[in-house]
Image (tube, rainbow, N blue to C red; front, side, top):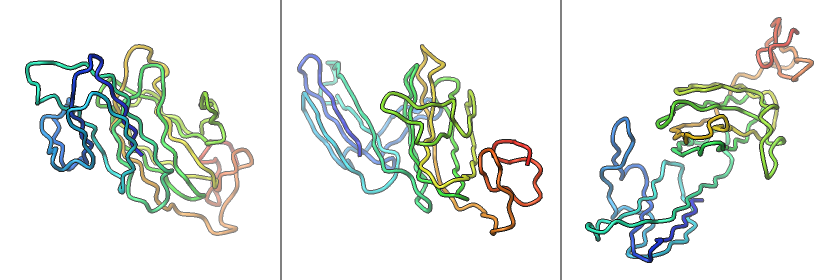
Length: 232
């Protein structure tokens, strides 16, 4: 679900459109929008001073909320905007989740995934604004209303600008992929990411060795755990 809240601070009007990625053209490198087809909007509101809309989309895609002032070319507008996205946890077999979002300075953004033993989580993309971002995979059990305990993360990649992560799940549990900008107190980061869950190879019963520390099922004969690095 995409939640859109906006108010023009001086009581002037504006247009707003919700568009799928197919109908938006963006500049290379900077990512700025230079053309869009407003007639293809999934939802619109024109010449309004205030917007409050919750919209549930049917398919996974990159969606753009475009604020338009072309009807008043000579008068700039100041708009207080809040846009948020809430989606169901990504599951095995679903098409890749593609998102572009901003991580504010000192904050983080999570993506929920519903993973099973043997599933592989693929996370690939890049930071398009700002230098880098920390990426962690952590159990949802370590999430509270106030924070996520990243010290308990199963996997962390620090200060990544381009990333291609493949993480093999060792348990049946909900996980969170955390894009962490907590170390940067001044610079927001924009992340262009795709996430997919695919079925990994699960060893047959008796053909694996369970790690005594993290309980990951390693191929029989392995000397070290491929999940936590402990000696088997």
